[in-house]
Length: 539
Image (cartoon, rainbow, N blue to C red; front, side):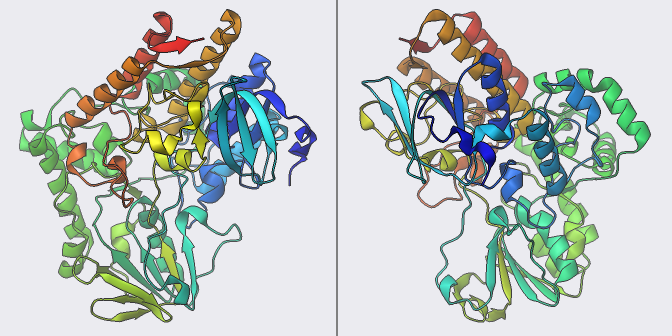
């Protein structure tokens, strides 16, 4: 437990923050800067958020290290040095721990404390937050910094309790690590966490069986150490790089090219694809031709290029066929960055099970039983993802005006204004909530913009004497229509993905993030403020 218990006797504060990842730490920093009293709760035993829980083998950032960081302190930017282009979980967690220590943020948090519910009290115009320790805290403002990908999805497969071995979920990995040496391991799922962990596990295990339902497109990360010369160059130009990221489409140090895939020669197209492939990273797709995600014909050119790469890399033609994605446009499911994923299937100790051909029927004591056989296993790893964006918020059991639950309000899909507030839940601020860019790019860029906007709104309320704020019905409806209109202009809604909520049984099929781009979104948020917080009702 943490020294944060010095705040245990405080039951009334200005604000409560939930979560101690990038968002929660920065929210506490900004609230302290405003002079507001606050309490902060984190169910984990330390800071880190995503990086506290996701400790699976190979876990790493898919944003370049020098922009996957805070920008609020020039001294911090200059004193911290990243080791490589795409840092791993341990290095990112060390960075966040350094930030929390350097700026004395840990004492604001009650660690190992889960928020079990929060209700708006109409009489007092305040939130009452409850924890699993039985504490009740009254606050004018409630800021959720619970992350977009923090509610782990364990598939409901019959017989899991019968399994004699150990099983794990990549999003809740044991902190002491797992030794797979000499074991028969099964990995279920081939999304981002599966693609990152499979090459590492394969090097340890006696045998690895990968259970794949839908093949994934993936591009090489191109990870490499940062040389002293490169570090000096980045630090010298970091302010310019940061400013570019703030206004770019996905918060990265690159953006779409002016050229369109359908308007260049095949030679020029392939040369550009090859050059970007060799470079590695998201730039291959999101710094490429600007028509790839809006025109099916252009997207097909990119998809065919990656399919050809898979066939070149994977030696066995039948395995290559099973690993080759078909039936959906590239990047309309989360596009992973890999470090030797497809090459792993050339190993003698790795086998692939195509669940479309032989689906899982049940888990038995000895392993996983598919329609054709039992696969004997000593350990199972579920790389099955998360209940994205809405899941972490719904698990807080929020009740707004009149006792209405957030779950009831969002039964047909999330309704927000700017992805930061939802009507009927006054003074509730969601950091990177549904309807904001969030998962469609570099999260720290999105997080800082949201926290800055939220705290500026709170400062405005304090200065004007307003007790509460929430969106108008018209603004919320209009924003939802805008988010849908932009999504429908792309290829994303054509695919069943967690962007659409399709990975969770019974979840409404709605495109969850805002796809208009980080820069465009930032401009819209600024315009709302310039117009006197247009679309918000203050009282």
